[in-house]
Image 1: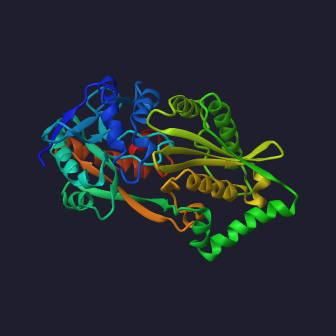
Image 2: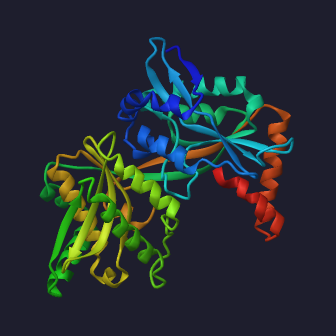
Image 3: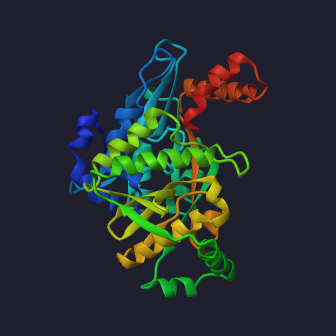
Length: 385
């Protein structure tokens, strides 16, 4: 397949490809809300930086076949630190440098096109290597042709792995429960029976109306924060601690129904929401995003109940696959889901400047662990990898 690569000049150019990008994101396996045009355009609007010490430049590339069809999208940006001057470092990264709001990032394409699109993009990037010093390449499926090709590249080095968990669903809840391990069956029995024994009756609610989503998300933010600040439990990061991150998700909810349908799953007891999880419905796939719950209800396993009820809802609505999101904690692994491992690595420019800049920044990052103020300040430049 003969491919051509074009750099998009502006966010407006990306928005003009919305229909093509929507079709492309639907070809991904599994599908991801982070690959949709709504997420990408809003991400650039909310998270692009343009300050004295850091400046982001739009660097998105579209890959097309010989018939002009879009086969891949590389949502990239070039970050310069400082924003001006001969000593600035220029690194390329995929959209998603946002402290875990974007859980998975990388090339947007069908799995069968990943290798060819990767090769075409590599050629285009090295033809313009004077524009960048290094690139953080995320989201390459381990064991794929693209992974093998990048592994052989002399300028490439793998850095870390991420594991995502996907759960194929049968036709009924009874079939699903019967196919689970003894441990998860016991967990399900415990989470439902503990509430019954204590005389508590729960109501499971799925919020989907656009007019109701802002209030449901604000409840989710509060529960997410309470869970994160619970000192007696395993520490969780408050991903939505800043008004900036909350505004992003609220703006995304305002677009719900265009390319992705945002849902807020709630577990209510005595009229109060005690657990909540955000989900993204994409055709016959559901991506379960971040969660939160009242720590005082932790002994009743209310989050396990919420996930179980969400899976029940998905089965009832003929959802084929539930994505439990990346991570290796027991809340993902206990369900008997299929792991999908992706890898992140660093590609160096073939210029002397690129190698020197990256070596310098790597040294600064190493020294930052020793606690010097200057090193810590400069290590911010490692944000993308």
